[in-house]
Length: 107
Image (cartoon, rainbow, N blue to C red; front, side, top):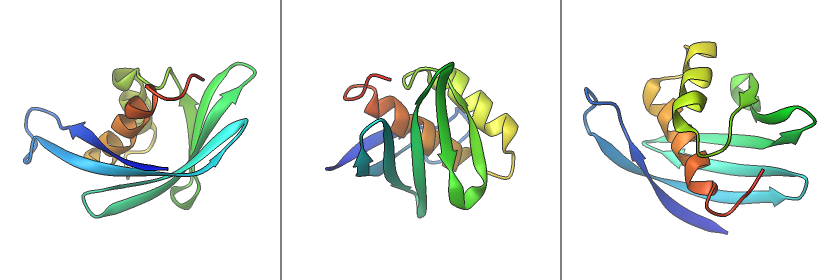
């Protein structure tokens, strides 16, 4: 399955919004997706463990806790503060992809 989602940037960003694409690669007790937005692409693995939710982006060496998929504020703060080498545009593209998936997935 593949679909398009919308990203909303911060007030000082130009452009203020952009589209991204999500492609499902694997669904079972964890999810594996490919997210593409603004010429960046991320292989993402996320799911639930005993104490909460997690996200891993192997090619970037990223692995951290997540709140609910639709908690964009907390997830953006966690990802952008923990991994400052990730641009804010890319962090928003990832977090907004997770929020878009919350309509289809309940972790």
